[in-house]
Amino acid sequence: MSTKLKSIRSIAEDKTWVSFLHDNHPYSLLHWSIAGVNHEQKDVWLLQDEVSFEVQEFETIELALAWIDENLTEITDILG
Image (tube, rainbow, N blue to C red; front, side, top):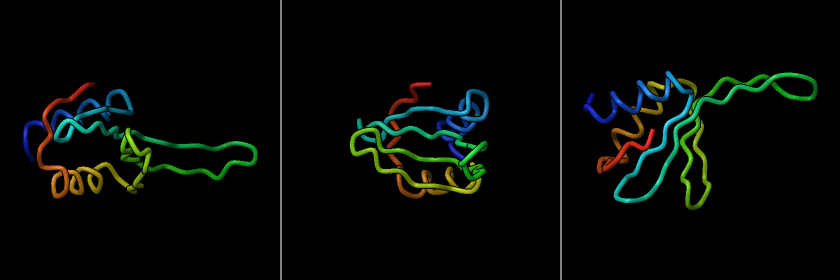
């Protein structure tokens, strides 16, 4: 795992979210769990494109990071 992916993982696990740039395009990886009245319990990691607001859902952070590693290879900055 690259240094940048390790940093993304560490920040995401600590804060439950992290934003980063891929080729100057902003993304966020965040943990989402909801529960309560009229809400289905959910425990997933979301990868959100911050321009189009398209979201991909992953069951674990490992799956999210594997997808990022394969598809977003030009991570330029980690915004924390």
